[in-house]
Image 1 (cartoon, helix red, strand yellow):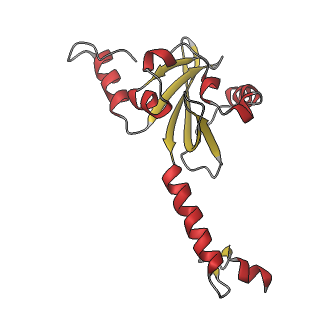
Image 2 (spheres, rainbow, N blue to C red):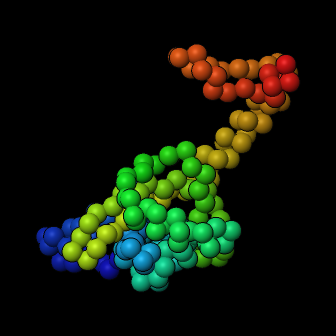
Length: 165
């Protein structure tokens, strides 16, 4: 994204708001070309923002799924719908140095005079995933069977001892 325009201009205000967002924001067109990226996107993925704009979003997709990502994108573009953060999908992203990391991605679309644009808010959840793994390890190390149920009586969590019982 370009530096904000003169103070008081609508364009400058919008650019400043996008750059002030706490998450990485990336806007792509129907071809998957990155049209807008904020500073957090550059920081998160290890790129200068000017190096992201105009490139394919597949650049940020892990190698393991890069070949299937265009088909996923086309399906989404054919029937776009808002997908909130934490939609129970195990997603990952790729940094410039090739490392991958777990992410939550929220998607929303807007029809413009230039065609459909999709905004993706991307959040690194590495810390949360590490804490969950630690919790699961502690739970499975417990000597007793543990079963957790919700208000409706549905089982939401069991440890290995409960499974073996």
